[in-house]
Picture 1 (cartoon, helix red, strand yellow):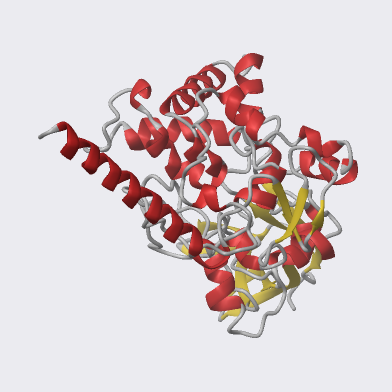
Picture 2 (picture 1 turned 30 degrees about the horizontal axis):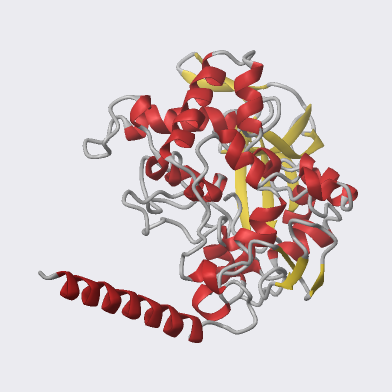
Length: 325
Length: 87
């Protein structure tokens, strides 16, 4: 190829590239202010360490203005979604079990030892426990695994505990990352905005915009993690939470009207301390229990049978099946 | 809801209570010991007065001795009496 032809080809490629950018930009929603993100030009570099990923989703800066909300959130399991309940660390233990009893035993998982675990493997749990892991390199998955084993094998390992507790479902997971479900309709979340119930300014240098999320008060917001059931989008589907499915297909058709937020945040008065079965408030709201008991002597000809009959009636008042997750 | 998301990916059996529904559990509690005497079965009442304790537990991992996970949701006691000689 001659030099002239090469230059022409390069020019054509540049021209086509520019024109495709123009077309892509023209098709974008005009008011979302994040066209570049949608076409992937300014896609953020993936986090390489736990510290880096934790910093990106750090809720601490929100505390200055939203102290009450932060304090409530800090008591919730969302604040320790990879570690689990404070003194128990059950989620970390379950992660190890998943690797040992699941990934390592599956012939085609590609995991023969913990060191083989990458982001795609951890996503079977992180899909809900740490969805932002999708924005991290395999090195972060490796670091999580290393700390999981370190903590489970030695619960006094405070360094491992601290590393795992730094990862959570913080403010920006719900109020940014997961604030928009239908991205072809509404665009992807703006990195510089906090999503809530209205458009406004937000007094924060890093997030100077407040944007309205159409789903912030709807059950689908929670349903993204407390979901429908098997996650068929994964290479190896998993099943944990089926609450949103139960809510959609059993509670609503039978006349239920409350959203997840109405019961778990408003009626419970727990706010961002979103709780479930460990909370006495939620337990009272979830079930009515009625107990009737009668004692008697049953006579069968000459045989006497002293006995008691107990009837326990349980009425599910929740917006989903009980138990579930 | 099944044990171990890594073990299966579909509902095999669902023992949860559906929303809006009431379920009833019946418990028949014998209050006697049984022995054989002169070729016959004889039942002796354990106590005429006794208490029945009802507890409702939420056991995410199937065990009560699971501090921090197992939750006692409800408890009540019922005083019972079986009159001597019958009733």
